[in-house]
Amino acid sequence: MAAVTENIASGQLDLDLLNPAFEASGPEKIVGWAAGQFGEDAVMWSSFGAESALLLHMATRAIPNIRVIMVDTGYLFPETWRHMEQLRQRLNLNVWVYRTQNDPIAYLHHAGEENPTFRKDRDSCCAANKNEPMNRAMKELAPKAWLRGIRRDQADTRKAAKFVEWSKRYDAYAISPLLNWGSREIYAYMKKHDLPFHPLYEKGYASIGCNPLSCTRPITAGEDARAGRWAGSDKVECGLNLPVDNSLDSSRL
Ligand code: SF4
Image (cartoon, rainbow, N blue to C red; front, side, top):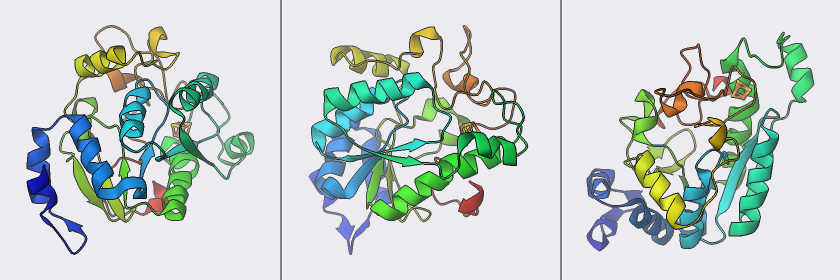
């Protein structure tokens, strides 16, 4: 990896060299590289979802005081908060919670969302309650890079992702060490390090976001892990992990 890190000029990473090299690296090597390259100028995003303990464990071994950004949409499961607290204590996490600026009940009222268990306009809700707090977090904390736990096998929108990408939107590098891992590798790492899954995981929730049924539901046998997210709609991303060079108006994401 030393040969790779030498190919950095004027603060710009040579992504054409880095990414092919990382295809053959394991996630721990990539996280170790990120630690050497960015140190505490890197942050991490975590939803404290189904398998979030894995990257939190890996990241804090390399950067013990890494700032972990968690977005509170106002609609998270109580179990997510318990899971966050459990991991915060176990891994001594430095968690930075960024909250929606909306009162959760008032938002539903003003947005014409009569049923609290179902969102009619999920894009607007994600824009106001998930993307706005994350945009604010990234602006205020101004990291040079962030670690995220996306995997290529989770969604078509993630298949072309690279391990390191420049994000115009966040003015930072997106680092995705787990891209090539699947359920088997995830499970093996969790077991090896005795890491807890989210409490709802064993109830069939393979991917966990907000608690309206329109946004997170348990999956059934044969469904892929993200089938329970925004089920019954075309939506597969909340907007945070859209291709990092997207030019969409971030106020709508
Ligand atoms: S996942 Fe659902 S409840 Fe959460 S911000 Fe998006 S639309 Fe709103």
